[in-house]
Every structure is written in structure tokens, then in C-alpha cells.
Length: 129
Image 1: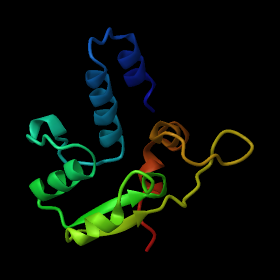
Image 2: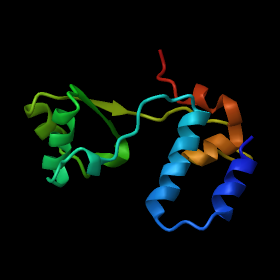
Image 3: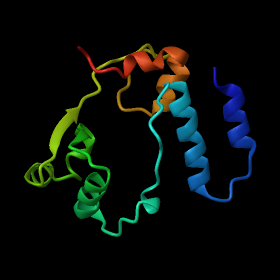
């Protein structure tokens, strides 16, 4: 479903890795029908780093919650976020999908899901009801 686009990405001489990453992100959002605007942190005027930078980002965007994956828990202090008034919700990826090999391998790139499921990939990302 996406081979032509990826050929174009890989055949282009990129000057900056950011530009390549943004092109991948745009493809992924389009394929998954995600319309959320993408903003670079550098465009938001946030100078803090680490946990303070995350809190500043959430405040700047008027967020009230932060989704955290299991692999992020060692890098992000959920208690500090909660003390600052943010809800912290664990984002769990329990949905497996058919891969082209013998068994399901977790925690691969979103590209693996797109390559294996094509336009149906979005269905595997929805939160269970």
C-alpha cells in the first residue's frame, strides 16, 4: 500500500534527519487517518529540558492528561506530573496483529503494523471499549 511513497522517501537526498522524520510522520498520520496538527517543540519556545520541559509543554498546550507507555515509565516521573495537576494514563498496546512470521513480536515500529495491515492498521490502535 505504501511502497511508492517509501521509494520516494528513500530515493531523496535528505540534508536534515528532521525533514526525513517529518516526512515519515506525515505518512503515518495520513495512513492512520490522524488529523492532529504537528508542532515542533522548538516552535513553542520551551527552553527547559527533562521533566520540567515536559511540564512546560503540557502547560503551554493546556493539557490536563499525559499518556505514558510502559517503556516510558523509567524516564518520566508520573508522581511529579500528578502533583502538578495532570492525570497520567497508562497507554498499553495489548493488541497483536498478523505478522508475516511464526509468532507475534511486540514493540516494533508503527511501520511494521502498516506493512502488515495496510489500511486496517488504525483498527489495532483503538482503545479497547
